[in-house]
Length: 139
Image (cartoon, rainbow, N blue to C red):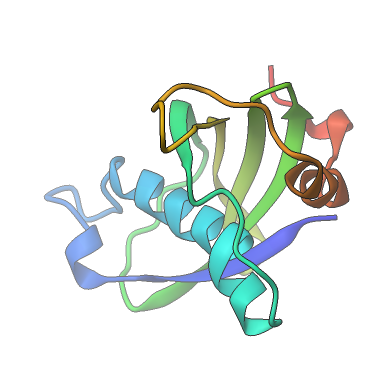
């Protein structure tokens, strides 16, 4: 299963080349991740998860540039791997059926008392397993 989040491409997201600046894609990824683990859960009356995670790694592959602001971009997000204290998420950003970018991030669950990694708990693991698509793991 994939979670989908719509992000608005702002005029300010475009750079001097007239396309979305590369750094902005990480903001889109962050918005989708926050929606998946926090906002969409609150809307459904569920407790947010992973308020204590950090991003340990982020990768982006740019496929097709977007040359306009004021449009909506669909960000699909899924779980590619679940470890003891970390998990990997995959992302595809598309519009009108055209794939524009792929991304992958590795998150680490962190104890807010020690600021060190902590094991993913059973509730979090159950949530992650709902979105697990091992075949989509990007190498």
